[in-house]
Amino acid sequence: MKTFLARVRRATIVLAAVAAIAGATYASLPSGLAVAAGAAWSLVNLLLLETLVRAATTPGTEPASVARRAGWALGGMALLLAAGAWLLFHTPALWLVAGFSLPFAVMVLKAVSHALLESRAWRALVRSPWRATAVVAALILAAWWLAPSGSRGERAAGDTAGAPAASGDVAGGHETPAAEGAAEGHTEGAAATGEAAEAKEESGTQKFPNVITLIVNANRGAPWAHTLHFWEPVVFALAVGLLVCGAGFFASRNPRMIPGGFQNGAEALVEALYNFVGGILGPTHGRRFFPLLASLFLYIFAMNLFGLLPLMDSPTSNLNVTFALGFTVFVYVQYVGIRSLGIVGYVDHMLGNPRTVTGWILAPLMLPIHVLGELAKPISLSCRLFGNIFGEDMLLVGFASLGISMLSFTHLPVGVPLHAIFYPLALLTSTLQAFVFTVLTTIYILLMLPHESHGHEGEAQHAH
Image (cartoon, rainbow, N blue to C red):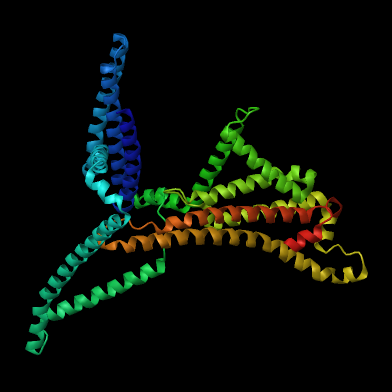
């Protein structure tokens, strides 16, 4: 019984999350919250009932312990009843009841599925894969046929209703005032439809709705909603930064000689990044610049993956965020050059390090080339990262829309999850883009270091 209730809880949580997201997206934000609140209320109520029944039926339990557990359970039920009354008056009642009934629906479905799986008919059906495939195909064809047949009947009825008026106009040889008004209304409606279509085409394909989008849509008239929408990429970027800092804190809070899983994974990642940076910059400069480069990789990598979570968005799919990252790298690289080479050495580097007559003759030409090259670095870094992550998001949205259109005859907000097959590609792309950004930043720093500190500047320029 305990295992059955645990499975019911897990299935209900997943189902309630999906139903709440669908309700908030296609109905309203209060509707989605009502579904989640109703499901949470029902789950807590079942947990209190389970505690009360166990306290009363467990053999060998002391009476004081039974009374204490029963008191906690009854007190919790009283508070839960008050919370349910408040929710009933302050949230959409229909959506709240739907959320409340989710655990019971899961129980019924699990019981029915258990009885079905144990039946002889099911065993006979799954004994042959061809028989099972034929039954599934028959069900799909039946659903496909029944849904369009209704829409065809409605379309035929609409055409029949509009036919007499058209026949009367033709038979009379002239248009009546009502017909003229209808024609004008039809023309205005067509114009409005055309304007709506043009507006839809101008708006283009939208990304997946996120939690800020839902909040803004539920509070369109509030000034703070427009401010929140304007700062949406910054909010997500700050949230990712806090998550990365929190993960680093928990990984290093209590280090052990024999690390656990989380500490072990964090140490392996840090060691791999340190070896990579040290292999390019050398041991001395690698230790000096490793904190910046590792933080840059982890931050960009986390921002790239953040958009794959439900109701979240990748801050790196916004050009403002990626340009801020590129501009930060640009400023830091120039600081490293001035700090390492000095003002005179920095100017000498920008002139192309002229040491011969030919070098001094070409110096006026090399200076603008070097300046343009330095200015192009933040632009190339930001546009590359933005284009890849934004294109990745649009790919997922496009195939998700295609999956929904494939089941449009069912009139449901769900469809075939065609975009799911691109999640491994999105993971690979997110990792590669963070890696490329970090590698290029490392090479830019290497090119600004004194020539005697590395002997492979030509190789680095070639790699760049």
